[in-house]
Image (cartoon, rainbow, N blue to C red):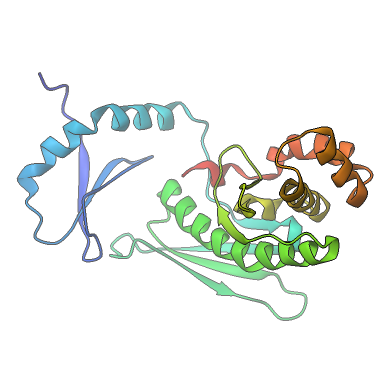
Length: 239
């Protein structure tokens, strides 16, 4: 027996290769490729009913989050002022354009699209943040790696929900893009922590001995990093 009907808005996208379900503050949006057989939609929506209803409930119970008007990337001492231009009928939904200032003026971002869709704005800004993280964090990690003479295999940038970074047994390091919001001293400590895991995979005494060689005050930094979620703005969590 089917449950209550789930209302949704439908959008056709020339770029879509499959049906995409998006749940935001405006409800469920269904994005379909061109010439998609729409009679199949009720079956697809019903198959994802549990997830859709949970997401709708989560958004309804979540505190109101607004799109940012400034983004402060503490780790690289870079602040961006954010402007918005409403283009509700845009097929591409959102775009972000940088206007890097010269001199003392702040850098600016222009976000175009359905700017009332805060989760949508969040997603496009997260994509922009991801690019910034890859451009700044990976080279920075390489510098620290050379400084302490601990090489790693490969570095990637992700959006981990519970970790600032991680190191695999093969020596690959994954960095959380939200590190950009932390003070530089904490980012450096996270880098040192993960590089030391290349020498010691776990948190045995040998690991802390390695870390103390590069960061004698590591205990204080470890404590700060555990509480560093407060540096990350709410819009980043609206994935």
